Length: 73
Image (cartoon, rainbow, N blue to C red; front, side, top):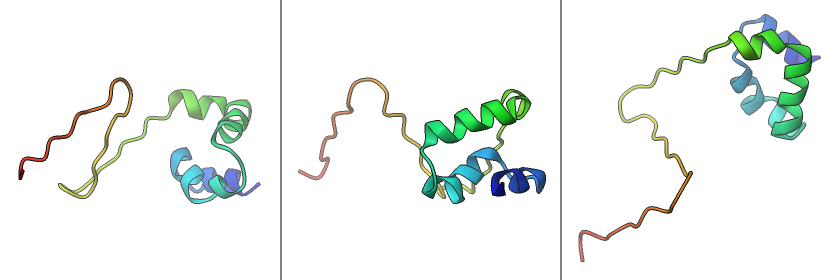
């Protein structure tokens, strides 16, 4: 399977999902397969993400919605 080949090459599981598997299967099915086939990778893998300042923005949408105020008006 292509996913296994990517893992052997050293690619992160999240990156494999985003670039390859997302078009072939659902997120939940992909990770069910990964847990069944590569359980140790999912338990022991830590993803370190490095970004340049201002390159990315992340928002946690859990909980209540944020009220936005237009400071210009």
